[in-house]
Image 1 (cartoon, helix red, strand yellow):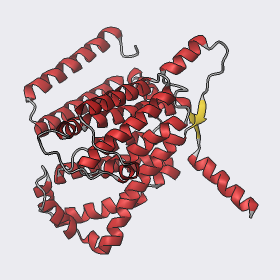
Image 2 (tube, rainbow, N blue to C red):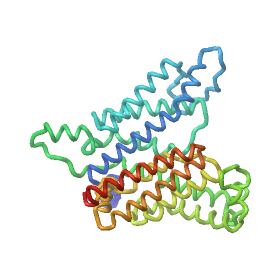
Image 3 (cartoon, rainbow, N blue to C red):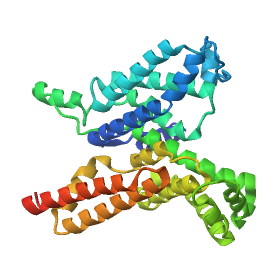
Image 4 (cartoon, rainbow, N blue to C red):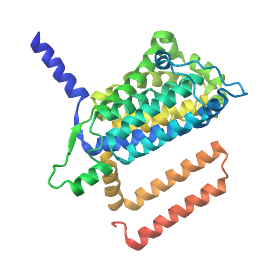
Length: 355
């Protein structure tokens, strides 16, 4: 029995507490802190509006505290207190992204982030797309997130003398982020099967959802039962099998674009929003520390001009699509794109592609 428990613990330790490059954990810290900062700023107008009505002449939205706030008996706050919480959250998350007193900054940022999110959710409706981000933010202070890609590491190398540099660290927060994302997708896929049964695969359920929304592509997709059926089968298959990414990393090159495409389709057909937090957190499944070197090798090789041309075309296409959806003047974005592409091509022509 003891041997069985020991093997189980070693397996758990190997899966949930992997030893990964310190640079990857540092890049993960930067990513999570910046996404959390984006989220805090995204909800700032709503929280300030509700806080400004607390104790005033106006009528704020009903205060329905989340479970943790109910346990701690947290009460709504006024505008001055909300401003202080906002400042603490922004400053601590910025310091965490820069890697200044990394673990302490991430700890303070996590507390402020949770409190700020609790205020937003206690006045409004919670959104499930923030679950993975919440777990990632909470896990950062419990690992050596400042061992690389941080000002802490820079100062340690500069003034630490012969102190050894950590190249590999226990990257528990990365695995927690991967697990929460994988379980979220898997739960969404299995719930469709358990609640809707195999009738979900006939496409009529998805077709009814499409025709009931006013998204950009909802009418076009909803007119085709075959297309709705293909999408119904594909969505369940991708979501239910998404945990394979955690245990079989080679499958990420299929599942990550598939997940991003799923969120793009829901945005365009159901007007659910871009799910920017989930899109950015999908990078947790990639070797983020290798991205700069990979780009350098691709751009300095003989295929550099073709790669730059392809990236420029994709950038311009993305900008044009964004303009079509957001209403920004087309001429301004196209002009900016032309200036950027022309400047980069001019630099490469003068200094050479290898440089």
